[in-house]
Length: 266
Image 1 (cartoon, rainbow, N blue to C red):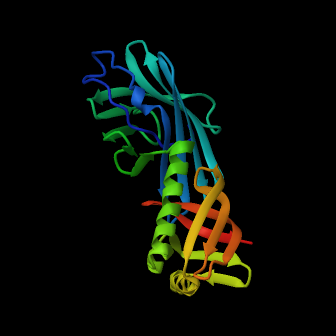
Image 2 (image 1 turned 90 degrees about the horizontal axis):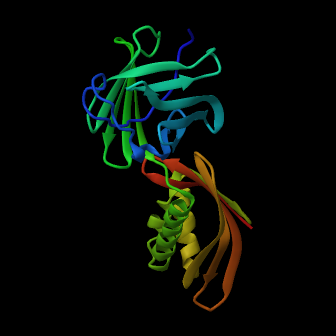
Image 3 (image 1 turned 180 degrees about the vertical axis):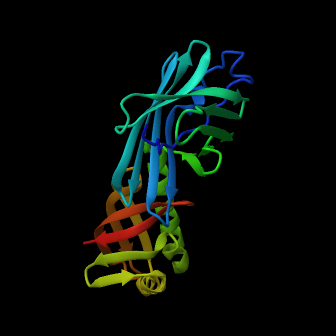
């Protein structure tokens, strides 16, 4: 049987999976995200809830390119809660019966499978999940966070834009630069700025215009590991003259949230 290199999410059931019929957890519904910034790897899992069956899809990308996908299911076989996975390399679904659980963790095991044989999941609050998969000698660990919806993401990014405006208008130009990745790029007009030092210098130079800055987002397009946001920037200098451009921001997910990776204006 081919290896199952799937990534799974945590869901609690009541103790002693083998002797009682555990409840299916409704809180697993939605989208969950895992990333490794250094390796460029990201995983997005989406779960939909039915009355007796939860269906899931996991997509793994490396530097934005899809490299793996699998179907998943959480359901009952008789009174046993099982986790199932279906990948293109296998002819059929592979199931892992629940062998141990409580309100914050659950363990599935299939001793006949090559890798993994055991899958353990741990819930941490409402927006954090951890998973451990292994075969007794080799183990893989994953930490997920709940993916924001479209409206939540827009609120988050608009809040960051608001912070940038406030920082600029108060003369805190280094704080404006902190919204960018350390290796971010700004391109537009006669400007070609790259790297943390030049980003700080760029915003300090721009700050010599004085006056007030206003940013307005016009649309946002959300992808699993990045976001595109188009809008309008207006700086009204101390003489009342307006400097207006359109911009396109490429936001990249980081461990702490979102940062601007590329900033284009015209």
